[in-house]
Image (cartoon, rainbow, N blue to C red; front, side, top):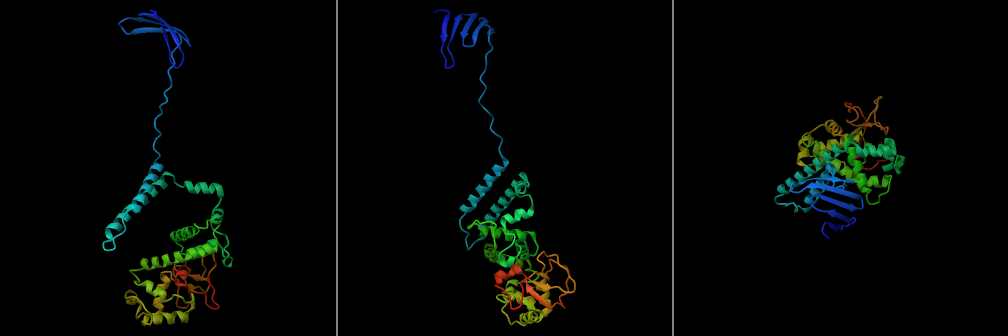
Length: 330
């Protein structure tokens, strides 16, 4: 019908009446009249206000920098796994590529730590309240082995360097991955100690390579021996080293042969391989209460008048040192 039409839509139908200039719309929300001037585009509407649908569009969430770096870290792991085996005839390119990727991984870890500094530690502290509680949740407070304090046992097998404590603890936790039983006791710690002891023995030999080359061959002379030696035993062994009666590498011979036993003893004490039993009121800071001291515990110690020495516990597991008759381990 001219001037009358029906609008059908998903919302609700409506009825419109009118034509050019005046239109009245009757719908669910009431009656609205629109006045307009034909040809000008100008109009005015009377009645209920039109409601506009709210936009369902929402801007994308800003990128999470921590997640982005985590994804990059995983990408590098996949890249490393995809690398071909190192060519034994020409290993340098393969090694360089791995070093480059590992360096990128370390930088990403540093950046991720900077984005959330101290967050894991704070979470643990809120749950466990103090350091001792945290430690005892992971490691037994008292080990089955001789009822030794777990913390003392681990620290005693280091040169009091924080990175060594971290390395030993990490090795222990990795060894415990199969059982997953906490707190970790001596049976797992002793297995991890063999790996840790070998790694640290080789590290010390490398660390002092320029001052005392060929140290690994010198360490091997102590393999299987008792770890506690009185002065006469130790001087006799060092005399044999000096006179070439034990097999040493050419590098080891360069600084050992022809030397006085006291010089060799001093060198092995300086690098932390030997500890000396302190007498005459010398006190130690070690929590285990041992009277055997190394250079990491006392800066200067006159070794000439000291009667007993022992191989530092950090080296014993790898070298298979054993407890001698009447000797004691600490």
